[in-house]
Structure formats: structure tokens, C-alpha cells
Image (cartoon, rainbow, N blue to C red; front, side):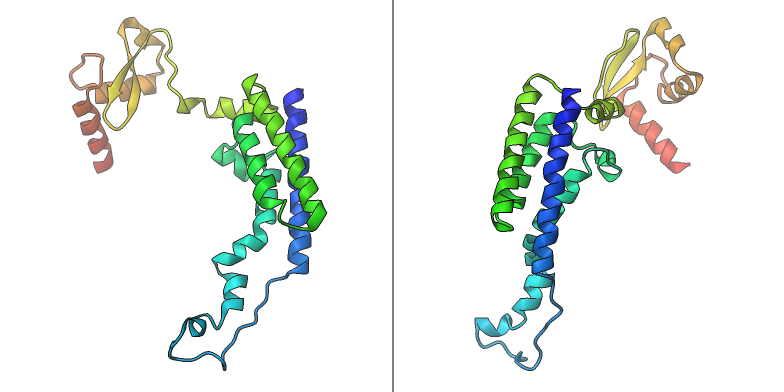
Length: 218
């Protein structure tokens, strides 16, 4: 399947990015060194406020720069057959994946480990560009199709025999229309009837708010 092959190529670039990150951290390991005697209790100048700049660069927000390849590589590697990434549902198409690979190559590869970083960076951007082109043809990998199926509930799709009413705070809510309500499961029908207090077949905003409030009080 072309989509799976493209996903594998992207995963290879992420695995190489992990390698770059490991090499970089191995050669520049974090330091636990701090300064005490040279620091003062007063701060007469700018330098005195940064007497522990080395600790700040190793364990402050600035240390993220050191771990950038590792972060991008691990996230990218997790996108092929993920556990954590499956929950957030990213990427759901090759447009999203292509943009990620461009960011990976530009920020996570090219500035690290010399020629190796430049080569992997260009490779990431090339695969990312191919992904962007693939998105124009609606090409998807098996995982993207699975995510699309799992996240289908995020999109409103009208079904025959169902009427959709706009409810405050809830977007489009499906309601029964006429005899089509017979196709709804008993539990769903009972829940609908609890909300539809006036029996007109449509849940109004007031009915929806009252039903939610009643449920929270239980």
C-alpha cells in the first residue's frame, strides 16, 4: 500500500533523528555543576544574577534545545504504530504528517551532528514534501484510515430518518423524526424522552440545559 510505504519512510527519518539526538546528548551530557561561593546575596549587576547560568542551560527551559532532536525523533517514531499518539489522533492525514516532517528536519536535524544532521534533515524535508503532495490525492496509511474511523464521532454526519437540532453548548444534536425513532436503541430513546419534556420531537436549548442540570444534581 503506497500510504504505508510513505509512513515507513517517514518513520525511518524519525528513527535517524533519535540517533542524532542520542549522539548529541552523549557528547554533551547534562551537568549537575552549580556555583555557590562565587554567587552573592546581592545583585549589583547583570552577571551576578546569572552566576548559575550553567545549571540553567542544563536544567532550565534552555535545555530543551539540547534535546530537540530526541523529542522530535521519539514523537515521529511513535506515529507509525503508536500507543500514546493513538490517543491524541495525530496525524490523521499526510498533510499533518508532512508538516511535522518538515519541522523535524528543519528544527530537529539540520543544526545537530554535522553532516549527518544535514543529510537526515534534507531527507525529512523531502519525505515531508512527498507527504504534502500525497495529501492532495487523499492518500492515507492504514493507521490514518483507522484513526479516521475512530474519530468519526468528531464530525456530524446526517443519517436518513434523523433530524439534527442545534442545542446551546452542544452543537448539532441528533433527534428522532417521526417513525424513524423506532430505529433508535431503547436506552437512547429513553434518554431522548427525558430531555424532550414537551414531546415535540426536538430538544430545545432550555430542555437541554434542564436535562443536564438534573443529571448533575443526581
